[in-house]
Image 1 (tube, rainbow over the protein chains, first blue to last red):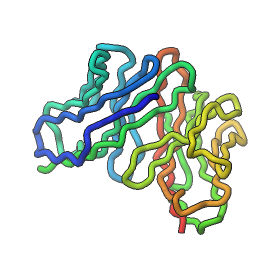
Image 2: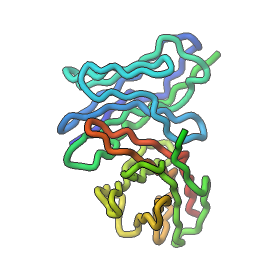
Image 3: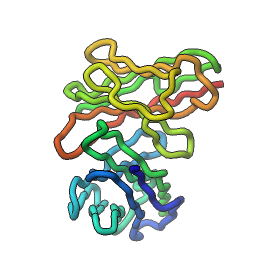
Image 4: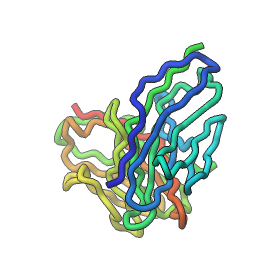
Amino acid sequence: GNSVTQMEGPVTLSEEAFLTINCTYTATGYPSLFWYVQYPGEGLQLLLKATKADDKGSNKGFEATYRKETTSFHLEKGSVQVSDSAVYFCALSVYGGSQGNLIFGKGTKLSVKP
Amino acid sequence: EPEVTQTPSHQVTQMGQEVILRCVPISNHLYFYWYRQILGQKVEFLVSFYNNEISEKSEIFDDQFSVERPDGSNFTLKIRSTKLEDSAMYFCASSVRERTYNEQFFGPGTRLTVL
């Protein structure tokens, strides 16, 4: 079946530190991959996406590269800010047999301290 | 920028009562979804809806749940007889089905508290 595994949190970093949140996936078919972010008290927002192998999604300084050989889509940011404190969800969607519902990882809570 | 809206933002109900959660998807979208997130846990797919019928549903979406698009704009989730374990944040999402990927846009959620 299809599943997403992401690193357990919480992750606590100082401002300007480097961030990596690991995400690996299992999929039947050829998935599209997403990172969603949930700020405190808010809903889910799409942060970035990649639809094929070796694609790099990027937004707001965050990046993730679709690695088919390692079935991974790790999220990175070179210098985090306090405002990046949120819960980050890795997700996949498989086009084809199903209608493409999103399958989420458990989420990783990031806290950035000044 | 168009967005998905949901009402109410917070619903408190007694166990056994019926609740209806409402969503207004983005106007040109064709596919609609409900997800839920129990506090501290991952977001789980409930149901997808296209062309006025359910496309897919998860094991969670049992007979006490139903969805409807009563008019051209609203998309509702009904829970017939709420249980304590239905307490969660419920997210509506919508998408335009692209050929190669499925980017879903989420509403802000409705927090359902069952007492």
